[in-house]
Length: 397
Ligand SMILES: CC(C)(COP(=O)(O)OP(=O)(O)OC[C@H]1O[C@@H](n2cnc3c(N)ncnc32)[C@H](O)[C@@H]1OP(=O)(O)O)[C@@H](O)C(=O)NCCC(=O)NCCS
Image: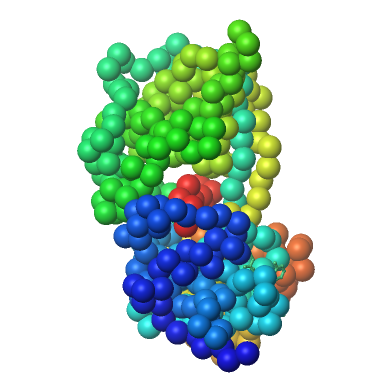
């Protein structure tokens, strides 16, 4: 086998789609490949080629991510990681992903993150779990909201076309800065995504958009007529509410949609206040709580120096032999390499997991992924790194 690892070019796009399709089990038509092409900057993709055939791929999206305190940093959203079944477990994915990391580093992006298809792949590559994803189901027939949440007539409306693209761009930009872990969606992205979502997806309808001055929601409907007992499934695919009023108004409207027997979603944060707005909190059930975003901090000084901390303190963390002193508080911080005695000892993956504030040092210590100098240090570390709002990401990249 003569393996070449190189940067992808425009000419590789269709072969990348075919290789990835084989690895993940999908197949794009020519039209689908063409319409998705603008979402991908192939200069950020690396491919392994064996005898003229693409056998492994990985790339990244240029994104901006919100950190605790509301500061945003540029980030490489790693994606399209695959190796053909004929070439697996020979270390090829590792080489291709490391080439993508080198590209992210060369662009000055201090962070790489990804969604993992399987839980056991990415710790080997320096990634730790930074946020969670929750699968929920709501029975709208049990989920009544108090009359006080009924929105003013006209404050929530259906939108489509350019109005939906503008809401997805402008409202999202305000929303994503309020939640650690959420990422940028620019206008060009929304112009591609809107027509993709407008088409039916399997048994689901095209997307509908509900708009409020400070929020919007996107959903698809899967019809279930059940011979006279309609119980459609409403699949909530995005909900961006900048204010509590927008959140309540959008949910009041979603829960009022007729013929719906279930609302399913994986975009509701674990600390979303919705259950408290319902007369019966158990109308919302959590079906699964899984790992969400995996983070690999490429530049600790920039990442841990950019976020804020819940209280003022200074802690030294040793990760894979390198020691970092983080000193900061609610108003800002600095992070620099030091030689002093560490308070916490871990690997690069679980050091990275601390960035968003959703994975606490005490959890990692109890899970044997970290050790602490003593119980007092561990208590301080939990107070320091933890955040009020759970980090969360609705964007799948
Ligand atoms: C996941 C996938 C890309 C791995 O490709 P690969 O070329 O076989 O991976 P490598 O040989 O470079 O393995 C790198 C490391 O990850 C581990 N690893 C890879 N895939 C793994 C898996 N599915 N489960 C557990 N560990 C895995 C390997 O053991 C290896 O660890 P080591 O270097 O410490 O021994 C490939 O199996 C694939 O295409 N799967 C289907 C698509 C997919 O799920 N992609 C990931 C999207 S997030």
